[in-house]
Length: 125
Image 1 (tube, rainbow, N blue to C red):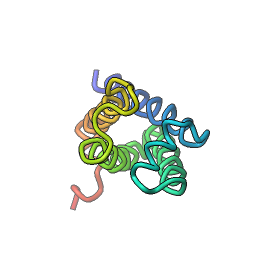
Image 2 (cartoon, rainbow, N blue to C red; image 1 turned 180 degrees about the vertical axis):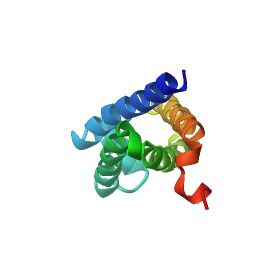
Image 3 (cartoon, rainbow, N blue to C red; image 1 turned 90 degrees about the vertical axis):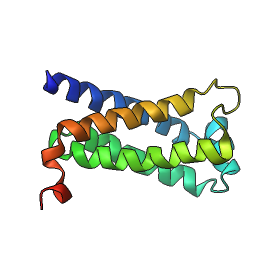
Image 4 (tube, rainbow, N blue to C red; image 1 turned 90 degrees about the horizontal axis):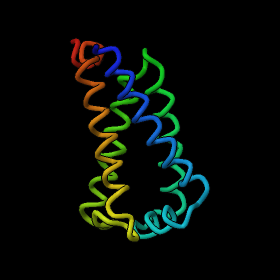
């Protein structure tokens, strides 16, 4: 059962990240707006997209999914903090979709880390 939950969490997080990074690399108006409001357009948008791409790959490889989950938590921590401080929950009338997606990736990452907790290097001292 854990095997299926683990794969579902990996795939869901990777799909969400891949979908959002597509908009970053395409310089979609919403992405440009978000990173402009944060004061880091275009380099922040591009670098976030690069890190999201790396995270997607790491999540889908079983041996590296723990590292992908850790990276995803870092990325989503930044996204959630940005929503709570500068952007607001709802961005350009999205009904809170981007915020919800960040919470979903965070939840999936926590599931991965919980199931694979014995694989987390710094916890096996």
